[in-house]
Image (cartoon, rainbow, N blue to C red; front, side, top):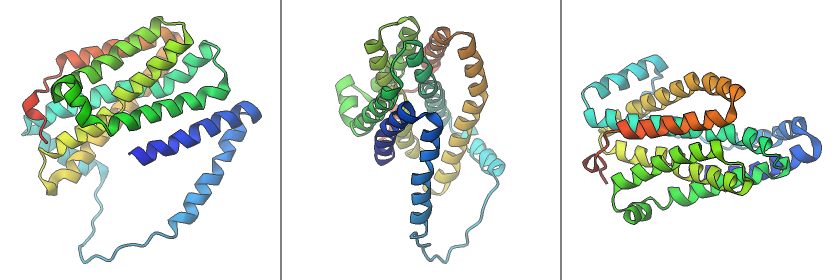
Length: 254
């Protein structure tokens, strides 16, 4: 995950520099170069030899198989709700921060550097979970804080007009809200037998993507109506999800 984000740290500033200098179409065309390089590198991969029979499964079968597993596992349902609800709502900072920066007349040249700041903050937090849990007193308290901060952060973005505070809040929301997914993966794995883990986690991922798919057009319409109110709505929904979450310290196994 950290290497993936490190790639974004490099690519995002390059993209905004190209876009501001030559136009957004050129920035999109320039993406053909790294894609083509990846295409060539893919030829160097070697398929490992295996005697196991490999079977593909339809997504719908994987989804229902995982959902059936959840029916008899109360703790997993609680963890999955917290993970999906807070992450999906926090994720929209990625799609709303750019129109907000445009609204505040922030130069396009620096957009990528803001995204690099988000990625750097995510890397730091993803590799400091143990420290952060000790800092806040417990695993549950860290999860609580890591959902409250994005919630209030979105609401403050709806009121704020100072660019420095805007950038700070964008990075903080990303640092806390977008890294919880990795931490929840760790906790959820502890409650799933190894032979069921891939199926169950695939179902969680699909439910997460399904939730995003439903919210994308709704958030888009909301942004068209009012960007500031959209931030307030997202923040309020995060706080509501935090309020109804039933995660307990005993659920968070190491």
